[in-house]
Image 1 (cartoon, helix red, strand yellow):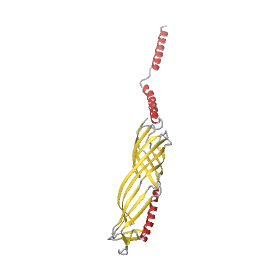
Image 2 (tube, one colour):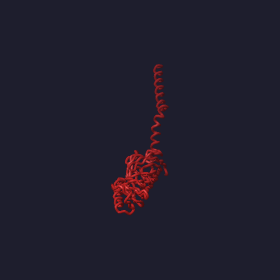
Image 3 (cartoon, helix red, strand yellow):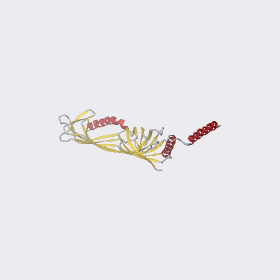
Image 4 (cartoon, helix red, strand yellow):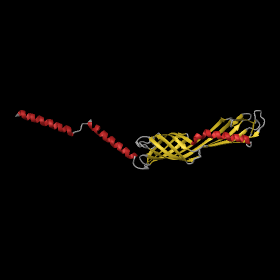
Length: 277
């Protein structure tokens, strides 16, 4: 009888200990079970904060491209699309450029503004396609043309010499804006309004703006052109043969710059986004 009571007591102690251990969570197990739940909750909260409706986030950024230094602004339209506006400006002076004996001193004056629709087929990744347009385009190059006295220059393969006493001067211009507005198309990587959360992004894009055939013109306005001995000089502004050769040379220059009707866009920059509602 005593042996039976002892066994029953041991069984009850074992059962009580087992029940106690099941009802009390182990300290090492609690963080392991709660951590995934906390992470999932955090991710869900972040997803809601990023994708909580159209026009909920804006971004501002800047970068550099062949169009100049730019400033950009973007707003989200939905999970797959942003609307982005951009403005570019660039001024640069170039001196002592020589072509066919003609010396050019000019200035690049670039100023454009446009917009694009950034489409992200895989919104959690950075790849995008961006059709758009340049609605303001004042990209021009203006130059002064000169030929020092006694030096040679050629027009349409005909060689002339500038008069030592009356050297040659003129003007030239190049416009990269014959189509205004101009359609643009780029592809790139990076979302100014990251769908995975966060504020900073570093977008990159490559493509072209279809600005139309470049407008190139040049005029020799004063001075005289002579033969190799400095004789038989003619006025460069009025002589019909020299003017005909000048127009033929201008046509060759226009052919040389014709590829720039597709103006390249290679842009890299940084942007910061934040929630507005």
